[in-house]
Image 1 (cartoon, helix red, strand yellow):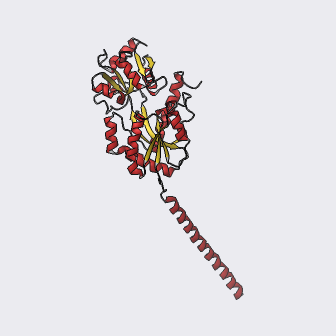
Image 2 (tube, one colour; image 1 turned 180 degrees about the horizontal axis):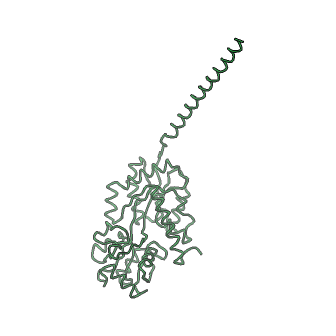
Image 3 (cartoon, rainbow, N blue to C red; image 1 turned 30 degrees about the vertical axis):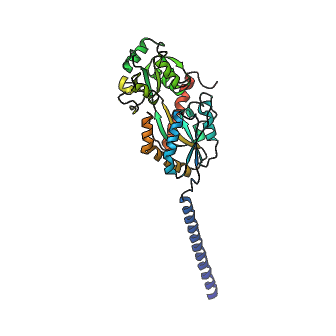
Length: 338
């Protein structure tokens, strides 16, 4: 009986010992796993390529180059800009979306990412990307010749109501952002414009200066030089807040009381949708800090370009809102996919 009792006692003791060792081993494994998970990813170890889907020398390209220079010091590696043009931005953004999702190729996404798919002009949408950061936003400024009869936005819209379809608004192309913005204003104000498309905002502004159209709804940055020299007059900023590019010009709401949400143009950084979140976080930190640097702010201010910084989450919501907005507006214009 004593031997049997002793064997039983030893067996129980072994069970407790094994359990304790197993528990210790499990804890060690868990601790090791946690340490591994919390370890910072080793990125970047080489230069990062920034795809710009438009030609060198334009607003998007110059913004991208200034941002790349500002972000390098926070990223610890060079950021090399490469221009991939064509398809109104579709070619470059498609290449960016289809690049290797390792963080070494990022794309300067623009508002066209949320318009071109609805126009049937791009095979990708914002869902092909992970947002990194928004760095720029520029609203439209309704602008007329300095010698025109309209001194205020209210006078301009009152005239439009009394003369439906008579006022000619030059835009940057049918279905382009400034055309869509003008139509949004038109609907919100209950007026009718005669929309005249041009191959970009530059030719539309030239047509305004020549008296061939009555107004243009392009960005403040694009008319700043002519407004500053007294050739053009900006009647209102189509946004909830004034533009630093055109100080003293009131918003649409301040001028008329209208609360129409008129879309503007923007620029931001995005990566392929399968890019690891840890890498996205590092990129977001570098590019938002770069956009906050005084040198970048000075560059943007000098060129009349607005700065609006949103992190990955906020930029993602911005993309969805734009996509949904244009998804409704474009078919209403008869410009959607056939």
